[in-house]
Amino acid sequence: MIKKIYPLLLVALSAVSSHAQQFKALLFTKTAGFHHTSIHEGVDGVRNLAARHNFTVDWQEDPSVFNEQRLKAFDVVIFLNTTGDILNAEQQTAFEKYIQSGKGWVGIHAAADTEYDWAWYTKLVGMMFYTHPAQQTAYLDVVNSNFPGLERFPKRMLWTDEWYEYQKPYKSDDLKFLITLDEKTYNPKTSKGNGMGDVHPIAWYHPYDGGRAFYTGLGHIGMVYSDQSFLDHLYGGIFWAATGKGVK
Image (cartoon, rainbow, N blue to C red):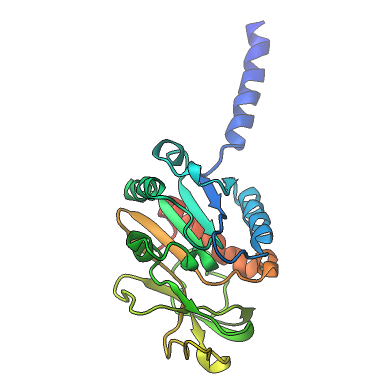
């Protein structure tokens, strides 16, 4: 009898092992300001990445998940087009401790339009949203391809999105720019700004307060969440933020 059970046990253990997940991500999409209709496409996109790359994703809009005990279950927190004041003081403290414990954060597009009065979060993001012109097509330039997800991203690429101009100043010695925007290829002028000049970052990463932070300004238009170049770029950021791996 034991001889019959043993092979079955091995098969069961093999099945569990084959379905083990690399890491666990919290996908947070709460908005207290502008609500992007692309959030649902974004959720689908991240879920597809999880299925493709063997990680777990838990989608939440309830900020009560930001407590010390519940956050311990996650390796990375993803802010997908969040806006406004979305966490109270207790939840902010729990998230700070989470990053300080060595975990990661990923911000997509309007994550830079979130929690302006929280100085720690501003430093986590790196640069906060200031203004944007109408959606336009422009050229992106990869300035650092030594980062996961950018191996197949063209050095220069035509892209259509909503181009954020970010607030200044920023800590250029801290942020490691990955992709910049060529302002000569579109009209950056708005009633509030004239663009950022010769260096207009649109994606970056940096170690922060014991943990890791990755941000991409791409991701306003829903269709980008089915674009393979963007998905490679996004997963690279998620992978690095969750594991700390991938940078040579």
